[in-house]
Length: 202
Image 1 (cartoon, rainbow, N blue to C red):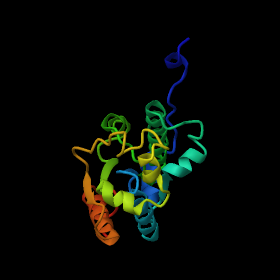
Image 2: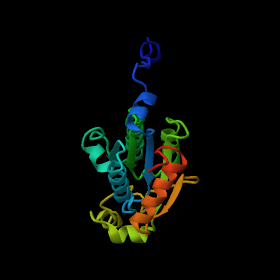
Image 3: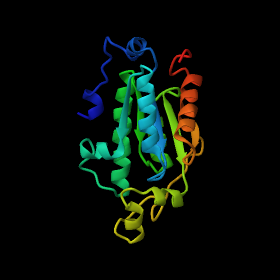
Image 4: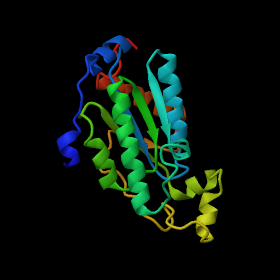
């Protein structure tokens, strides 16, 4: 017996639409992507804080935190990084079904992997936010010294050094990683309003 023959998706009495109605907003994913040090984690945390202060139901999926538990068995080779993103996408899908606005902060360097995650969602549920910051600025910000270690050959397959980053071709938002955080937050809120994720009276 194959997996497809005995595992089915159960439709429950409490639907996503009912949860969204109770929450007062739609469920959605804000998928922040960009180089290490681009500012995506800072922005993801800032927008979660702002949305929560507005009464929205939110959750932040952070790369380091995920690797402490759900993905602690994965390394950093290409196959493991792809599996890391796949798992995050599936978790985000469940959270959107719960009616939450989910912010994620992952380098997610490959277009194919980001597209697979996007394909899990309806068009009005997934928003790719590209935090565009030059490598030189990311290296200056680098709090963990990862770029220096990569330059010295101590870290292999480091995105932006010896592993490529495939820039999003059509992100919902192309954010300047060097602009004020407040400016980026205004752009994100405007995106959510335009797409009716949050009510127009906010």
